[in-house]
Each structure stands twice: as C-alpha cells, then as structure tokens.
Image (cartoon, rainbow, N blue to C red; front, side, top):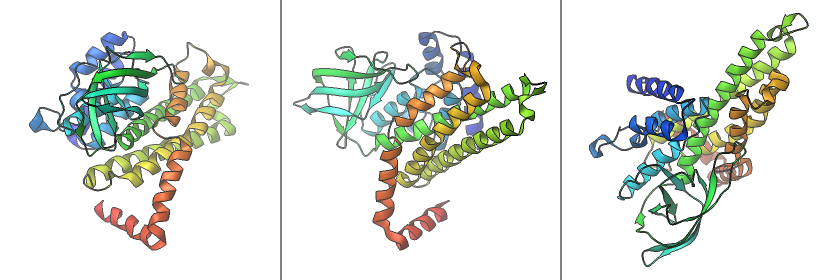
Length: 333
C-alpha cells in the first residue's frame, strides 16, 4: 500500500466511522465534502487522481461499515461522465447499466432498471451500446424496489427526457462488479471480526465459545473465505491499473466477482452459526453485513453470469492460449 493510499484509507475509515449514527443527508454531506466523488478523476481535471487500487480500498472500508450511501456509484458515475466529456452530474448521483429504452432526437424514453438509490439521487449516469448520458431524476416516475438489505434499487421511468449521449470506451458493468467485490470483501472482514469477538467473549457450558474445536474450525473457514475474496479483489484492481488500455482486466474481475459471490453462503451462514440467535435480531449489527452480502451477490452479475463469462473467455483462448494469457498477465505484475 502506497503512502497516498494509506492516507486515503485512514481518511475513509475516520469519515465512515463518524457518520455511523448520522442521518442520510448528514452522512452524504460529510462524504461529499471529503471529495471522494472525484477519486478517479485525474488531477489535471481537478480530481484526486486515484487509481483502481485506491477505489477498491475505499470500497472495502465502505463495505466494512455497511455504509448506506451511493458512494461507489457516485465515484463511477463522475469518472464515466468525465471519460465521455460530459458535465459531471450535479449533487448526489448513481449509475445505470440496465437500460431498456433509447435516445432519439436528443431525448431518452424508457426505463433505467435497478438503479442504486434511484429515489435519493439527483442524477443518473446511464451507459448503453458504447454511449453515456446524464439524466436528472426530477422528471422520472420512480418504481420503488429494494435489495435484501432494504437499500433502494429503483426502476426509473422516463418519457422524452432531454439527453445528450456521448461515446465512451467504458465497460461500466465490469467496473461496478469490481466496486461490489470491494464492498463484499470489507463486509466479509467485518463479519469475521464480529464473529471472533463474539466467540471470545460469549461463554457456554463454562467455557468461551472460542475454546470449542467446532467453533474454531468455523472461524478458520470464515477467515479463509474472507482472505480469498480480498486476494481476488486486490488482484483485479491491480490488473486494471496495470493494463488500462487492454480488456479492462475482464479475466481478473470476472474471477474476483465469482469468487466473492461463492463466498457469500459460507460467510453468512458461518457468522450466524457462531452468533446463534442474537445474530438475527434487529438491534445486533451483523445482519447489516450479511443481508448486504446476499444482495450484492446478485448485483452486477450473479454466480451463473460470471461463471459463463469466465468460461467463454477461457474456452475461446484454448489450452495453450490460456497459459500464454496467464503468463502474460503475470509478467505485467
């Protein structure tokens, strides 16, 4: 971790921790004032000049605290708009990669599906067919939906909303998948930390839970899963930084999202087994992590989607081609 990234993570930790009991508006103001929205915009354009490893690190910190804000979406939306030469979205913004509609004669008619925090944001950066455009949400009809954690995932209906699309060479779906991997990694780490703390403090049959071999085994499995997710996520972020002009680290991000998805069942069930009944109560914070993990698993590609995408990529390379690709990427490291 570079000195710049260490300072960034320290700042994120401090701010995310401080907004734990704040209202939605207060929390967003604190995060926005800290400048996280321009994390991926280059310094020459007035941004922070961060890279994908920085972005991944910040998303991990957000995931650790189950931060209930569209932070990652704002970062990606601002970056995508900048790449397309569009004016940055005003105020709080989100992204849309599931677009059912079209832009015709400078107007968009259709639906932006499952927009994170759609009812809360001021604008949405939509990407489809190699074009991006910014849509203010004030004229949209909002069909409210939520994920398992209760976070908004709304459908936004537009009828001839003014839109000026611009060409953009961004696979926003891939970038959003990396965002979720970071959040899932952070949430898994926090679920592990809470489970270890609970096992070391809770007594049963005259002994702390951590003294029981079965509990120790469960914690070891949970730790291995959390470490595997973070390892895959870090590798994906670094791969994207190393080869930005290539395929956007599709192979690494596909593997990372699939690995993160596969870990969810083990992480959530094991954490709740260690905690017992208390882990299911509304007052205890474990569910804020586990419900988000269950929701994030299906967002920006579920298990089947990424397994197929990864499989098609590997099959297209063939045996010899796969080995050459792996060694090429290893050489870049």
